[in-house]
Length: 214
Image (tube, rainbow, N blue to C red; front, side, top):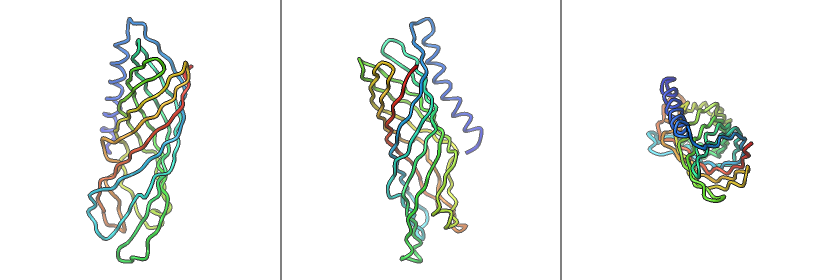
């Protein structure tokens, strides 16, 4: 992805958060900062492959983790909550070259990302509903299986998705369970032995986290 596109994504998220802050001027808004951490369960789906000679499948997602900083602007029962999180996701994948049917191999892939969700929600007593966009910057991707097979992944440097979920806010303690979907592709395919194999590659995950506001 071109640097200008990444810059535009950052600008849009900054604009959303700026509007929320402007709306709180001259109100009894509460501004707090805190920390957050938790686990994720992710899976990747590949569709619309353009090559019939190679089969690469994500069999299941393993648990990953995330940690970082959060902010919260609250006006009455409404809140805006930007987050800056470092996250990891792990997947089991299989590789098969149809020219050699017996050569079916398994491996693991790990993706490291920097996530920027901006949650907008409503709080009633200790319960809350929330949803909002999330921008992700892919920092690295590692897989011994793909490296051994001389396979290059064509991952996007930045993606846009959404999160939605429920949570509890017990004084300064935050407990959240969210689903994360995708609005853009994680990647366009892979290059296998100098052959470009195109497919739609998207990641979805469930996010469980605990935070604390100071």
